Amino acid sequence: MRAKTKPKEIFLQPGEYFVGDAGHRIRTVLGSCVSMTLWHPGKRIGAMSHFLLSRRGAGKLSELDARYGEEAMELMLEELARVRVVASECHGKIFGGGNMFPGVSRVDSLNVGQKNGETARRLLQAHDVPIISESLYGIGHRQIIFDVHSGHVWVCQVKLVDSGGFPLKAAP
Image (tube, rainbow, N blue to C red; front, side):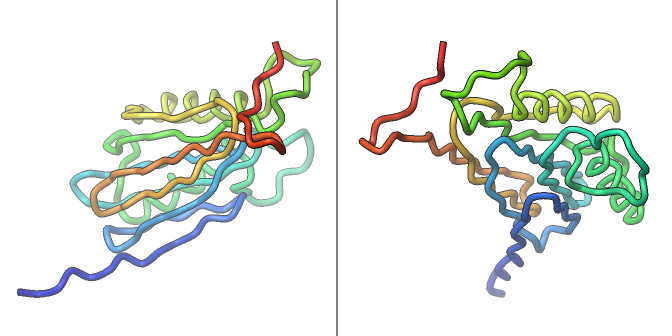
């Protein structure tokens, strides 16, 4: 009997994405940032992003930048197409969008995390990728592990606490 090979661990920094086969496990830590995962169950190929903002501001577009949700999706789709994976045949999952500053009131009605989460949902829907699960919003950061072999994504949300060890509450 042959021993199971240990998957190659990939850690995504903010503004990165990765596309790989069943021999990979992708990790990241998210605050207000969002990760989208795309997984093809038949080919056991997956992609994961870690984007900071939903879109780039006005200005000259030089090359695609995975720091922005719209461009991260485009980069992942291009790389998946190179290995003959069609987006609509993938399962999509979305994570992150946490409020990292719950006591700070905002002038606009949505915080960065909410905007990122809504952008991820819109992008997957626009490419006919069924959203199988999501863990969005709330207070605090998340640790994410995506096992490309199985398509499973494990998430652990870590709530923010004040200096006395009590969970922080969102401002009314």
